[in-house]
Image (cartoon, rainbow, N blue to C red):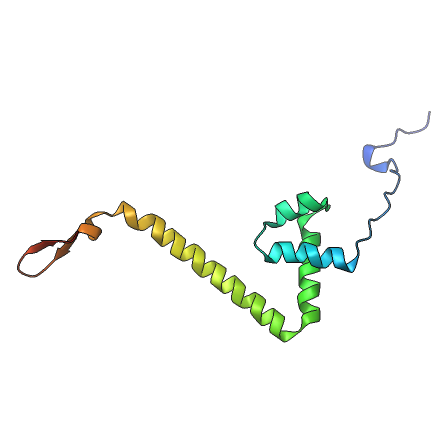
Amino acid sequence: MPPLKRKQDVEKPAKPRRRYTQEFREEAVQMLVDGHSAASVTERLGLSHVNLLYSWKRALIGKAGKTASSLDQRVHELEAELRRVERERDILPLDRSTLFFKFRSDSLVFLA
């Protein structure tokens, strides 16, 4: 009796690789740059994985040169700062005592 084949030993028919036009890639990256999440762009366009989208972005930025990469870095910095400021904004209303009262050396002053 021949040995049984394991699941990983069974050959699967190879799927043909999808080919994407340069225009399609640029539009997908533009959606990502415009603020859509990578997961939503991947799902909308039927891409296999978000890494594909990020590799297209990296390639397009590499082709654009040093200016595009510095702009991309600046965008990352600004997004990080925005997240930090939003966290501060969300935390600030929790400490209401600092919003309404200002301590002076001689008295307590109500600020409204």
